[in-house]
Image 1 (tube, helix red, strand yellow):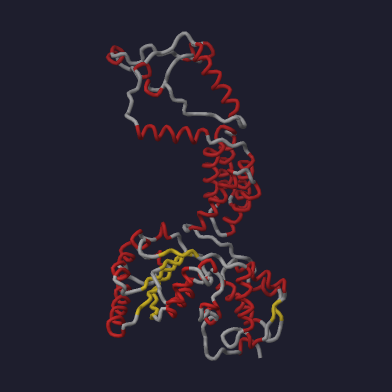
Image 2 (cartoon, rainbow, N blue to C red):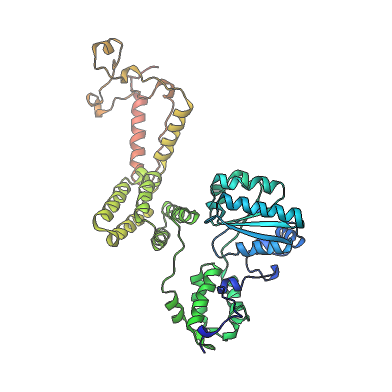
Length: 443
């Protein structure tokens, strides 16, 4: 009889649901939160539960932890999913919690999955009931609460960060699933080859639910008593699905890692993070746009060719499509990673923008003003302006182009790296000419 013919005491739930721990001692991972002696562990075991936001990747135990908290608090766990629920569902849940409290003196733990999907009004609907103790509020989210949740909710709940499970954690989950009866697969007497186990742990990427779902598929295809091979794992999961989302934290983390790798002059890391973005379905042109920003912000005039190469990579992608275009962007990423770095223009421009925001709007000096009419000429517009091309070396030494109030400023401070070193030498030469000039504009 194959595994397809087996039943698990009429329990048709997925393996991941059947294997959910029922006791805190069986909870795997997140020892930084729930190891004996930690504040959360002590609160849970004492039944002193408070409102929480559980923030972490999928499959790291958020729902399980909420269920364990409810059981230790002797509270009824009521569930809402922000994917499908609305304000009416929230009101109904609150009404049931009040009734439970009034008639049975029973507490309610309201667990809200994907809580970040609720809008501000929906999140605000929980606030008075958290404060008056009608509910113990536990929200689960894969998104950064600082961005996804209202400050009012955050001020009433403690944020607990759950981490991806380690391979040791996943190994523990795997072995328990293979050996446990009747919830697990123990009745099938399956084993797993060492290389298959390593591959499965790697493909699970810290996600226990993914691990158990793949294991369940393998069990459905296996004969009882057999050993699962690496080849079978590859057949069930032919390609690792790279973690990625287009708008969430992981997206910005990958982009940040890419940018910092290029800025840090590590071409290998730059290519790795770029490939991770592509493997997850990311837009190559987003990376191309980021390269343009890097060329201006982090390389600047140390190698002005970087900006041109980044533009050329974008243009190549637009002309020839992804196959060759992705490679052109990779080429640009490597070049920019190895290019000399300077943020001198970036710093100078930001400083000037801040000066403009903090200071008055100084008038344009008269000698720099436009004078298209006789009246403007009579008012002194353009008077005593020195035309640079008529000066030695096409440079009007001693001339001033900033408002008099800013003559002491030197915003742009070029680095001594790459081509910018030549610009620094040129700037020092020009300033020396200014210092030696007998013709100096006075305030």
